[in-house]
Length: 97
Image (tube, rainbow, N blue to C red; front, side, top):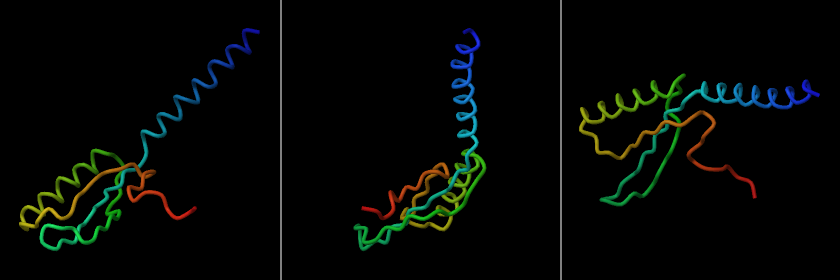
């Protein structure tokens, strides 16, 4: 009886711990969203993946580098950068009914 209770408690707990640590190790994707402007109004929006990184910290650092480069070029903020886990697509669901 003790063996069954021990198995029913520890197996799910171990599975939860392993799943949590695996999800923490996912890749990160730097996404950029560009807007085509007509005056002060956005006429088109394109969101696309730019680069992939092993950690969120690397991805955030890349955002800072892109923003510094944009500032040096005196580029208007028509491009926005965001980091998401590789399992997330900020463009939303694809097709279907």
